[in-house]
Image (cartoon, each protein chain N blue to C red):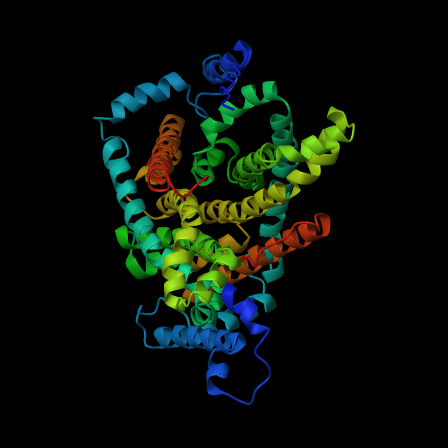
Length: 264
Length: 280
């Protein structure tokens, strides 16, 4: 028996409330600054942030670079570090899930390094690599590798034992089971790791740039703070948030495309 | 934990045999020991051969530095004082944020009007890394205790909120059907199903928040502090003492690990029904 899909329309109030709430939030923010309840040395109103955004597209002062340069520096660091962490973390996690020897050798060291917050590495990387690209890529790599390893490991471990037993009954070798059964069944978890690792990388990038940088969005925020310019700080925060959200969205689209047959 | 998934079923059939070299090499504890020894040996050698110049301290130098710090006062307080200063900030910030965020998340999931008002504002803040708040909180609250607690609270708030929200929304609808079949009303649904079923997700959120809290604490203390573990690291950085930097890293890793252990202990006490797969 065929049945029609029932579409329940949300009530009008529920559909407009989100817009109302964001609008009220922005207006309130504008109003507390303009009316002087919060002094303008502490917070910049949204309108001022927006005009600054337009200015910063072409004006390198007072922090030394236009917005696009800051954003490009940050993106570059994030992408190299993120790519490297995927390249190392996912194969390592998959192998740790299946091969006992790899797990035995890699796990203790991994457990030692894992609880250290990645930005704690900043002083050492400054000693070792200076404040250039390498140091920040190293920190982002450390930050991204943890979720990659964990998720790939759990993904392999969550493969249904029945399937593995069946494959064994049919005479599959260890390697065949790993390659043809465990890796595909771990893929949804691995893609989960892509999102988590991206968020980690992005957070720690900002941390790394706050302390050791001469361009980048995190540096923009620090300079804003040092110069006592809340508009620059807020602009930096908003740019970081928006670029992070765009990156997350791209990964999300990729995931939907690649995993069309596996999920659900 | 002993071996890979498929071998677990096979392991039961293999009985006790005589000594075999292969079994020794694949024994998990033997491998752990090999791994740790290799790690520390490598660290020691890399430091001793000065691969990074004088910018990496040998393990025993780090241990010695920590021992020295526990004996004499450094920047006004001894080692325990620095550890407590950091821990207190995390405790206060984390407790404050989770005490507000968890109930708010539950409330958002249970009431769609609250959700429609609050959720979009959180979607605005969600992609902003908590560390980005460091500068503005220094601008607002100065360099005192409150600005550090503020950053920690901001960082922990969002994951706590989102996890308790999702914890309720992802409950299997069958569970509600059961309560309704048994004659329960809305109140029973919430008290008997929603709250207990969302516990594991809430605790997962608390774990994530806790690790973010330590990261935020570190960021705040590296920017500006007069005591705490981040201060030790920063001081080591400024005066070029790799042993002090590494000592601070060891301490903060230890505290982060202990606190996450504490949360998972509480979790297994509160929700014993949660079946955990052999997680990392």
